[in-house]
Image (cartoon, rainbow, N blue to C red; front, top):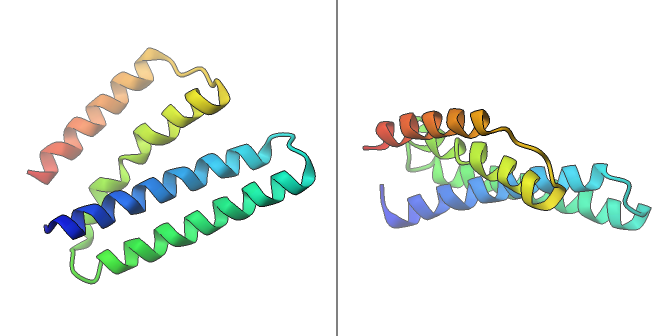
Length: 108
């Protein structure tokens, strides 16, 4: 995997995670114009991440891209905690750590 392919995988996961956080923010009781902008941003980020994933799949096998998607298992809950004050139990993070360990093992 080249540095460019790696970077595109990371960008796809970041875009997907950010889109989910935008959709969560839009679902809150925001003023109507702001909620629509946030919803639109979330949808645009989702489409962007799909486009980037399709681009990287031109040269990578699907089995090489999928482990990067697990990054959302960390980013989205962390964003929920940081931006929305969601409570996340310790055992959740233990589970995420186990999943991430497995993902890292598949990459090397």
